[in-house]
Length: 368
Ligand code: F6R
Image (cartoon, rainbow, N blue to C red):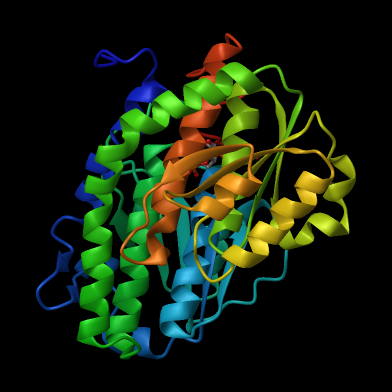
């Protein structure tokens, strides 16, 4: 049942190329740059009238929403709010028919996300579900559902659900930009071509990433705290990397926007503190590098995830996990998510933790 893997989580990490491919399949026409999402049930006039998006989710699904904010704001110019469902549901709901509400949930049964979805509906907002479980409550209550086709996720820690949510949200963003005329066919063709390359890139790297993460785990499995840093698209990845580590290894971990470090968390850094940094060579790379220098001057241990062949990164960091450069930096979240999952996995295994069934956690949180 685990297909030769030691845990469901590891099997599901390795299923990500297929999960992402299945989520894209049939929804894009690479030759024309067209994105087809009839299942959203949105008419084009309503899409053109949108003023804003409100993405509602919890946990890892919320992190997927945070990534999507960067994409969708960039491509469409629409403001995107990403709401923790447990907070959203107790605020005054500032939604109406011109706000697209997007409920992101692997299980489709998360109580807070459902409450948020129902509030959005009551306010007259069109509601799209992004969901992995066929026939779940989110899919029955949303006006339309964009399914992630990740297949059943058994491990409590979300892995392939996350990357397939990213794929679905990427398609949603392109679709909105297409209908609203924000991205022309040539631009969409490039974005689609880049997305379609992701499964192959992941497939080619999984083995090397796992081996590298095992080496790092052997060194760091005894640590008490980890800090994760990133900027721009690397910021939600830092949050996700820290969440994966804490939930399965029980090591305290915090994800932070790298630029926020000097507003507090820098006080934590000493020679016992590993700092995992998401550092692709994008437009904020230089800024991230200077944050790494700050960690180094306080003797923190730097584990950097960055591009292969990046010599400056090798000079600055103590340890580097190499990630290939994708055709478009917008794809980095897919590529950096996987080694972050593997790092958490290998550390948890080294600590003898029950990776698939972490204490105190349930696969779907159907009560608040
Ligand atoms: C983390 C994890 C949780 C879920 C959260 C939302 O690995 O699995 O944080 O992401 O409970 O669950 P869904 O997506 O089912 O609404």
